[in-house]
Image 1 (cartoon, rainbow over the protein chains, first blue to last red):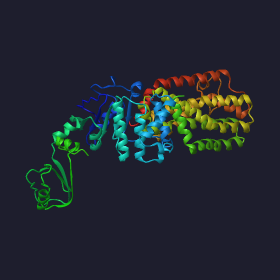
Image 2: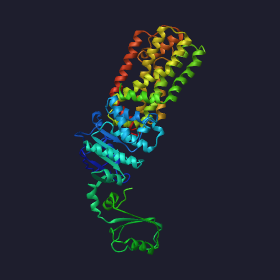
Image 3: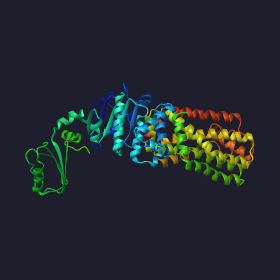
Image 4: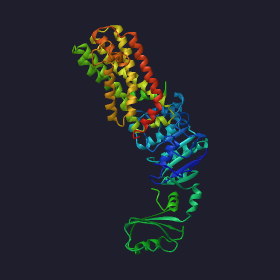
Length: 290
Length: 238
């Protein structure tokens, strides 16, 4: 995928979350930053030097692609130590740092198991350990939360926080808005290879206001036009689901559900939540993130 | 010891079933020929084909497989220089091949009651041939687009070089073929196998010199071509 109109800065101490739907160019952007793909136009500087497929530069980058790829016969301990060596660590240093990193991602108990025998979530944790073992100055994570359980998410958030506190910069491409809001100091929205919005999570959330988001799951679709009660904004209306924004604490939920039933639809379930970064993306583009 | 060398050894030692098969299969293939009292020329040709294709396939197919899986790209993006990646892995693979083929070579020498000079020559020639075959396998993989293509290209290139080295014909002194034969290091292996199987003298210093020099030249060319090879192998669709 060709990227165009992307202007991205990530400074030491920052975690930049890149959010966008499938095909928006997140992975292409990360591969460019990892020097896996050549730059066709524009300019790219990484860690103070021009980007390029140079070994010395690559040793300062930690890149985790979206799929955890390992030789299945190796153990987690061997993988993290050998990849640490590939990044220029001495054998003893790689082994010691690798063991410590496995402990931090919660893999110490499975360190001697062949990688082929552990779950996807465990392999994702291993990939995170491998990515950070050589203490890179630039951390690039593509969909790092896929397959991670809550403990794994906590470990990843802690490790990212520690790495940026030590002076690294991180770019995280994800569809996980909860994780992005948790770890990111800045968020960049991508849509069709273009940046469509950016800012700190709090500034972006302020753009969509404090209205609660109500998602109504429909057992049967509306047969007549839905007339929302005063103060309620319909954001999305489909056959199986509708989404509305309602003033927080205004008590309009019963009126909304009545309006839904008056339109001939039947309600299967209702969920009310605070607005998140997916609502910001929807407000910016009119499209959903996932 | 480089990271690529260490990685190749560690993976090979963890794949114990494959390791055992790689020792047993050559023994099973070599055994009947060695024990059947086959004509020396025929037996030496069979052994040479087995040893060279074993190493060429054994190198080419894992290179393609690791390129397709994304593992090779992961290694390259870690900052392992392409030349170190290619040479480290090739050296490790050649050493592993040597150890896996050693029992078959010992069987050939034992059945033929070869002398120490012939056995030493075979060991050296096998090491040179396996190094070259592994380099060839890496180039074959870089040119292939799939495991099947790697197997096809590996077979064709290895057999062509074996043919060029005079493995399948009676040398005609003074001919163009005879002049070419000496420059292809597989000739050294074939001559050593003829010496072991037939009880003749081991190859002379000229054949050794050219065999080693051409293999080192191939390694040098591979170092120069390593960035291109790794780029090709990490983008198999490109």
